[in-house]
Amino acid sequence: MKPIGPMMWEHRLIEKMLRQFEGEIRKINESDKVDTVFIDTAVDFIRTYADRTHHGKEEDILFRDLAKKPLSAEHAEIMDELVEDHKYSREMVRKLVGAKERYLKGENTSPEVIAYLQELARFYPLHIQKEDKHFFYPCMEYFTKEEQDQMLAEFYEFDRNMIHEKYRKVVDQIEAQSP
Ligand SMILES: [Fe+2]
Ligand SMILES: [Fe+2]
Image (tube, rainbow, N blue to C red; front, side, top):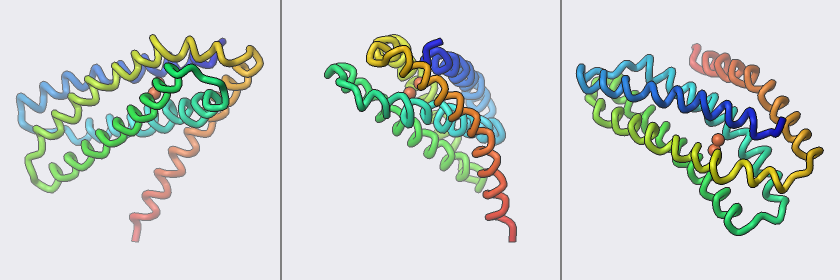
């Protein structure tokens, strides 16, 4: 299997999650209330799965190795764009968390929450499309079969560490909050 296989499966799960945003936006519109548990769950999914686990493999392994190859001007440009997209999604999530926190303090930030959810649901599928349709397949051409196998093994090792990293962070946070 090519290393882009698991990356594309991950895209499908991210899309599925983003599709849930639509119903949530409708609920907020109807009730003018924000389900902060949903927001926390969505933020955790994006930060832990889409950003740390998925973008982590892209940036720390795939893009790192591509940067060592003689990329065409087009591919180099797309790779820069993809890194910028990742930064933009982090920024959107940071704003969503900010709006949710102000909501919990009593401010009516539901229009902001809707706007950030809408923006993530609009923008991120376009990012996925760029990778799936214009980047992943041609990029594999830069690597030999051995390099691709090695990359896939590194992806699995990266994933293996994620569950431990995630729950180390959970305990660290609880520890930091306890008196
Ligand atoms: Fe990406
Ligand atoms: Fe991706």
